[in-house]
Length: 317
Ligand code: NDP
Image 1 (cartoon, rainbow, N blue to C red):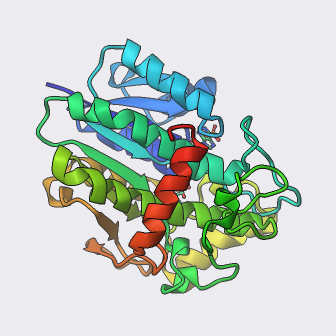
Image 2 (image 1 turned 180 degrees about the horizontal axis):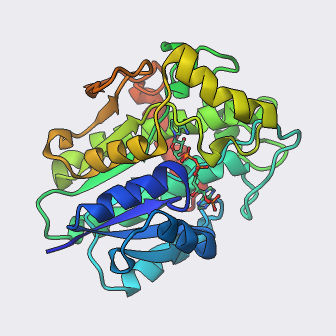
């Protein structure tokens, strides 16, 4: 019997390669949840995914209404779901002025965190409903969420403060979770801290009662993906070389996708509440390990506050 995995942002980079890796295993049908279905179809063809191994479905994580619509559309297919991978993200380091979602929330935090937070909450009953013994929800993390690690030390550092921006309604002119001045790189890092907090809260709240495995991973520095499309052209040229020859953090898109597929499907990764990493200085044949998440991302009080405020902002509360 085939299992179904939903992967957000499967039209490029890590998500596309994860879709390919899972489809190639044979026992997985992949729902590619993407904002641009024409691009996604081309992407699936470009990596030679067998036609019957995937289904394209529209989602715009930058719109909460679209996330709800996606869930309705998915339910209408009558399929069960055994795994959900929250992978889509935007990173817009050169933005001078913030962009906003249709709900009026800053777009990076909406796309990377709030959209996925809503999706996870709405899909939980669907994961629960599947009769499969092994069900997983995986959220992509990143080294830059963690100032305790080399890759996370470069300023600006993520800082959720006491969620002053969320508590004040997170509408223009408020653009940051901590309520401070708009900083697009920090917005990305803050959103990734929220991704890890969300995984940990899901584990704390639902693992025991549902048996679902909740986990996160740092797939390595995948310096060639389109994530850096909004950076200076010079950066896009030099960053992969820097990661390859200086930090040693470079991994190929294929390998990053394989790593996501392993966390979704392999028995070694069935433990819940875990953040997996292969380290930032890759060794050949390096193995994964359980990595301690950043002080903010392991703060249960912050987790609770993130949960309550996000719950209200996405309209669940
Ligand atoms: P890419 O930019 O290559 O892929 C991002 C994907 O997200 C694309 O498919 C993109 O769609 C999709 N996406 C963006 N906005 C939306 C939206 N509003 N609705 C639906 N889909 C959307 O980036 P990566 O593959 O590098 O990143 C994937 C994940 O891996 C992210 O969570 C990132 O934080 C994480 N990561 C990446 C690292 C790296 O070095 N690259 C390192 C650590 C973590 P479209 O194709 O239409 O643009």
